Length: 403
Image (cartoon, rainbow, N blue to C red):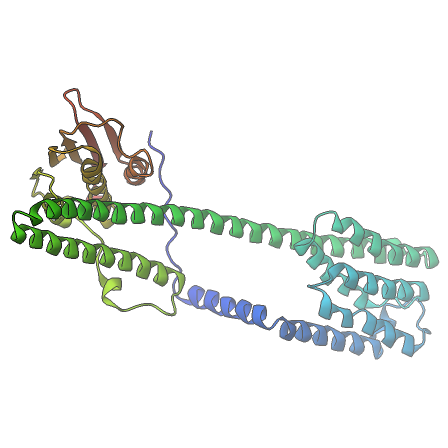
């Protein structure tokens, strides 16, 4: 059974797309100016801590007689260090834990002590897992001290809820980190696949056109002494082939530019040039003939139900097969191309009459052809013929128009 090739998810549209763009812009701004967000978060929690220090802290305090100046000082020590939470979360937690230790030992039991959840989250997000053990070592002394000094109900009302809060903050950091690592892994896989795709395209475009140019140049060199007109025709064909190769490379690079930067898309001719399709097979064969390789072609005129990607696969396979013939078949070789439509499938067979000392395409050529065919549930068979020469057979299922 052929393994189904995964298809990319459709692009999001509507409000979700705008939300993603807005979030991306916020992240980009934060990357460029991290101090803005750090200062905003710190100022927000500092104001909240000072509001609590103005009198609300007594609702949870065991000893409401704690001096106000001490409560204000501890509130600042539990909030101001948040400015450095992303760069030095462990150090920030250590400072805050010292303030929490004084607060619990005095009986103030400040609610701002729960702000220690913030550096705990960042430790789980950006530090090795063992750093959470150091965080636990910093969090426990204040809780144990408060429970020992003021034992009635301290464990159930103070220690257990605080530990649950810190555990949830750590789990949230771990979850966000796992998701971030997963997305980074997906990006690396996508980049690897994209590099492989670009390598195949560059191999097909450059390899084929250089082979054609080499054939034209060799023919023109031999014709220059006897038939200057033929030599001029060869030079003209070299120029045409070179321009076609440059146009294909520009199209490929412009597509990559569009995929990498939606906000700055090129509107030039290269960006609008369509990819090669079945209608371009005759042009491909004509170019190979001009390079000096006789090609006999039988192309069925029936219009197939093939996607643009599948048609590009047929084009590239034929291109690679004829390029291998040009490079490896030797002088006097001829090629034959037969493209037909069987029961529910496109079938293309490319053969040549050349003699080879080694099999063609030991690099990326045949591998790339097989990968292209497999992407559309197709098959590719290659091998020598009993009578000499080489055979490439491609079969791609046609799409069911009723599905």
